[in-house]
Image (cartoon, rainbow, N blue to C red; front, side, top):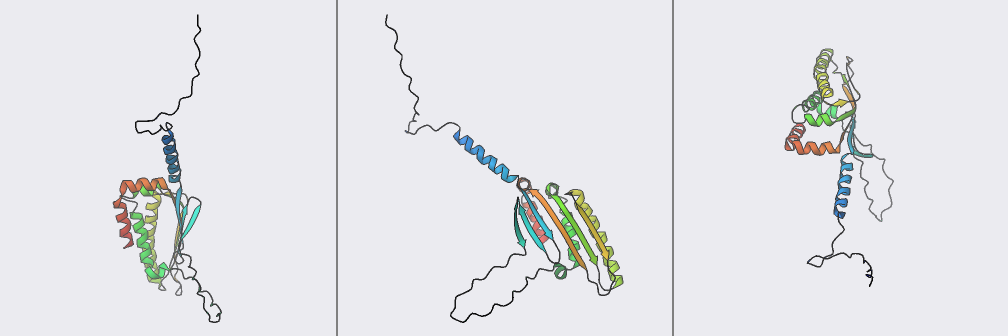
Length: 228
């Protein structure tokens, strides 16, 4: 009897479709898509924060993760020196960068009204937005002085009746880790009103995307009303 002969099994070669294209490795595109989704998710988890301080010397800093960008005041751009055949002149002394004095431009009443408008934003469409914000630190100090004792007392009462409820509304809506408010009158004839504040807020990028999708144009319209 003849014994059956053993045949060698050759490895399977990639087959081709009707158009002559070779079959790709299965699930490769799924791995690529999964990696992209994981990367996007990690980016969305990055915290975004804004640090603001000083009403007379306003400073704004944008923080994205570990990166910091100064929004205001902006760094002065260096002017390129043009080559000329004239003898070089001595450089003039650098002018100091003047910072914007909001208190003198807008007045104390405008600042108080702005605090009230910010508090009112927590009600309505942007309520969810304020719930996602984390206030790391908020300090507000106001010194009321007009040079006249009667006017100072009136403005001091106005500031207290407006600022304290507004701050209470904000701290009741937003998660605050540290905050404090101090309003004092100064009856000296030569004294001037002064305001100083420190604000450090943070929110994750993923919540911004969710809130923009959820509220859309309504939230933008409210923000534009504040800028008028």
